[in-house]
Length: 357
Ligand code: DAH
Figure 1: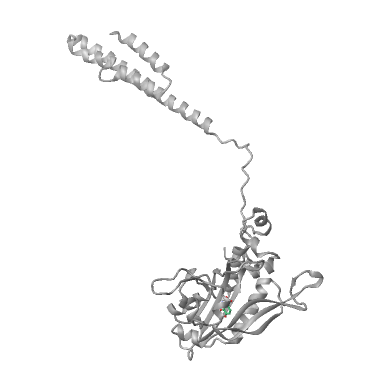
Figure 2 (figure 1 turned 90 degrees about the vertical axis):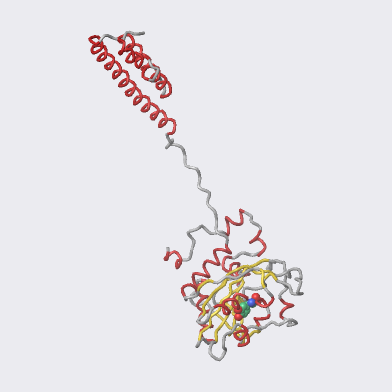
């Protein structure tokens, strides 16, 4: 095929017939490649007589340009077609109904912890945490509960196996050990709350072997019982959202506080229905007291210089009271119907938290 005219027609025909970039590349190599037909023609120029050579050279060059322009144009066409095919294939169908968004629920325990943090956060408390597996010292001894102290029996403690030195770690029976950990590493003023898991070998409608508490601790030079009362009255009224909620401080005993007081809130049980607010009844909701001087000393704080108050509260208990949950054990059943009923949508955060978002 030495005739440039014929070659041009054949080439243009093959270019038009190429339906993919790969097929087009095959055609390009066939005509313009190093062993290609047009390249072959050009190589033959040397053998021609000089007067023929100029004329033929011009024609071959024109042929080469025509073929390569046609290949370029076809490549653009093929790419455009490939793109519109892809666009058509990948087009999202805007008429399809949206997938229903699965809406989870916040567990009442998490919700209650968030609410408690929000209320104490407003009063300037910060959150502190500690380990679930505790040393006897932090869980008991430093809190003025030495070995053989009767309070140890009340805690139904889970002990870990004995270690080589005869000591045993425990699953913390309350969040109070975090008081000790905080005082040992931080100088007053201290103002912390400690939400967290706690463990006791106990199981019935109002007790679970794993449960949650929130501990509070305030230490400063002039902190006194009036601060304890004001802070806890304020908390109870904010948490139960009852402005004139009656709050009563009843003398009690804890080894780590002196004096100690249990805190009750007013309620009525008229018609068998429990209602929180003014009424003839009282409900105990937390323990509190002025931190015992011996506890301060155990934690390297001079009780002649500093004093403070502490409190501890069961989170399940206040959640059950606030949200009318009758049986504590259902909290851990992971029953979806229960969670949909008692759980919270993510937006149900207390207004104080929402305001900060
Ligand atoms: N740790 C106590 C318990 O688990 C609760 C408690 C009572 C904590 C009084 C305190 C407190 O900090 O002052 O029963």
